[in-house]
Length: 331
Image (cartoon, helix red, strand yellow):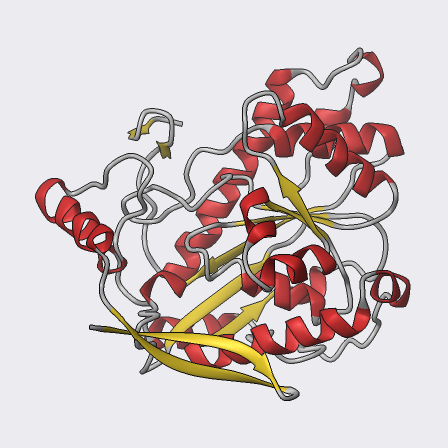
């Protein structure tokens, strides 16, 4: 039997409760595939034990260089400039409850630290490109940005909208359901562009799903994020700020029994410059040139990998994991 910890909101407070459930066959199969071949079957992330937990020594090393803060607390860097317009537009009471509850679950499950949150703009449109190592770590940039007083819209798979209870909550706090079917890319891009050109921030996970890299490095990305950033910038007449939010450590959390709590660190990186890709935007025609969208997407992946290597204290492997071929390819 495994012990799964479930959080829920009741009687004005959030509760973390253990529930005994059997270990599923799928989990055993994934671990067996890892043992037998060193990789997982296509479509399945590598198991938790494929990577080492983020050590206390590495966190101390990062803390010596950066001012690490607890992003699960409001205004963690001391800057108190909430964007009240965005807060009022996005169901403030429900959002507060969701953020408070998610923050408590994070603190109960892991030791979260972050640096770079001073980069989060006080107002105006911007893009956050977040890594996607696990389903759990998506909450780290989300909570961090909310605690900086911003309320980004974020693109998430449409299935989440139908999840009991929290699916509705996700939509109320800014989730834009993404239909991940062929032929839907243009509609997703246009919705994202409309969000940005209306002056609102947007958070995306450009890998499109949890990374399938066996060592959980950022994998190949769809160039939609490049199209969104470049086209939005062209329509607005200036380069929309784009930031990489890189989180590491959550892959080692045992959600059946999360104690002792593991270290999780996020870097909200400096803005990524892509002004050179906008130089001839007046001559693009109706669509963003594919080579430019690909190049911006490549820069995002490369920068995410560099930052993740620093957080992990490891050398990143050459090339990157291609989700289409399920193999490592040269950059």
